[in-house]
Image (cartoon, rainbow, N blue to C red; front, side, top):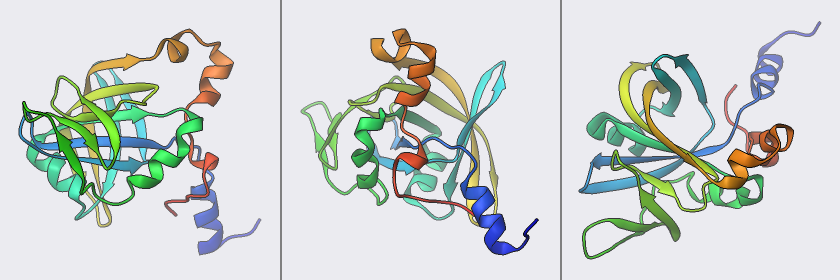
Length: 180
């Protein structure tokens, strides 16, 4: 067996992860709004349903999560992998309608879910989350989000189980790597 820092990074990079877009809002109904590419996400409890997700310390997303205490997780189809690249940097271009609701973030159509957080209109499925806890680590903050609601396309729900698992975007579908 081979050991060392390089091996540790390779092992950590090989852990299966999805690739998602996390929507946040500082003040629900008022903004500001952001979307961020994220891969460190997993379900951590079933009663209540809670998702754990980790964001970089000092990021725009961390500040919005701390302020608004809500998030929405967009799950994308593998065919939409180019979308995630746009959200590796904070959103600067926001199109808002006459009611003050965001319609586009960085050129991508969005909808606002019940919590006030944005989801991508192209999402195959999404989760609406209320922050119920967090732990600050050196490089990241781990948030716990209770699932408030969810929605999915008919193709996502009705597709064969084996195909459905492969239709959702995963880290290995891109040349991106994160972690280690």
